[in-house]
Image 1 (cartoon, rainbow, N blue to C red):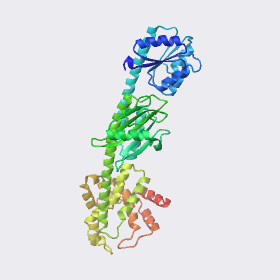
Image 2 (image 1 turned 90 degrees about the vertical axis):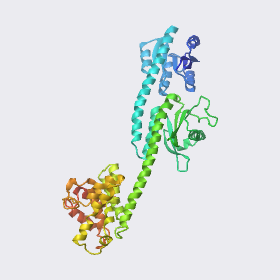
Image 3 (image 1 turned 120 degrees about the vertical axis):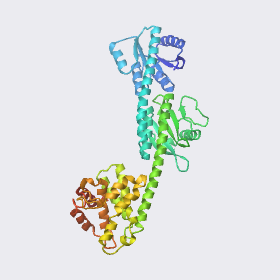
Image 4 (image 1 turned 135 degrees about the vertical axis):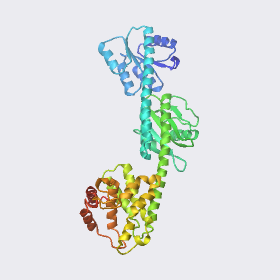
Length: 482
């Protein structure tokens, strides 16, 4: 920032000192404002861009120390030089503790003032560069977090929260384009900045303009509006950034950020930071949408597979859906993480997919199966694993589909593995599958009562089933949380 663009505020009840000091600083190229009291100085400070303050300590009414306290309370990050004609060590220490850049005693040389002003601006520039560096480091971590978030609401909330924190905004709103092509408020943040607040005409107007022109808008209440189609900010609002969220092909939303009257207005640096953050967030939001579209299609495909199997067996209609429900409740109770929970859920739907390769005569046979027919039935886990192993997004389900009929004691099929060698998801699936089968009608028998099914599960603890999983399942069923 050049000297002519730097605004210095002199606050002193001795007008002669203000005039002499003001003339000197204007000759040095600075813009100068003068206030004869702390109250007047605070009013000027809150009404326009001030970059440095030179304030006397002892003044009628609001003292220079009181003014300094208020500046820091308002979170205004500008250097303050304190002056006094009645110097004491305690006063100097108090001023520096409160955040004054420096302390001078009257009378002082104008050259001394000029040098301290130059140093103050150099110090502020260094602080801004350090702040920028720290923000860039934080920005790198933030963008990594956004890129790894796959849940829509979580991503929206994180993005808005990060935006507020990165540029110290007081409030914000995130608007995304809905299926009808209209902007809709998706998330808001900040005290007193609820959705109704953002429906005020000035915010609606700027959001529409930004979405239409695909360019960011920075509004400062003390400056002319950057476009005639915009409206003045409501009272109490000092500054606003409205930023388009866009992909290479389209605009997907608008980010609005606001500072109130108690803080400095937004500057170009804030706009640059939001530019980087919004660019990454736009990509992440679009990727999450694509991910959920793919996942929805994935789920539809899985359900179609399950329905194709059940269409062959009139007695197992709804079996896979029920097994999936039991499996999910049991997996949650056992503390599986979200990504594993989803795999177990889909495995529950597809565990019997291999029956599509088994004769309907065997599947629907009313009497006892022959040993040869039972051997044919026992092929379905391997057939199912073979079918889904060729589908990229189903490969991770193969171990659970292949091993859901293994017994904990090693006497199951197809590979006769035992104990912890059986995948944990397959052990969960085994209990859910067996219970659902026992409590459903089959061509060779009527459904068993719940108490009989519980008794069989208990009897098979450590034999057919993992004891820990049986105990967890019975706890859930007895508590009525299914």
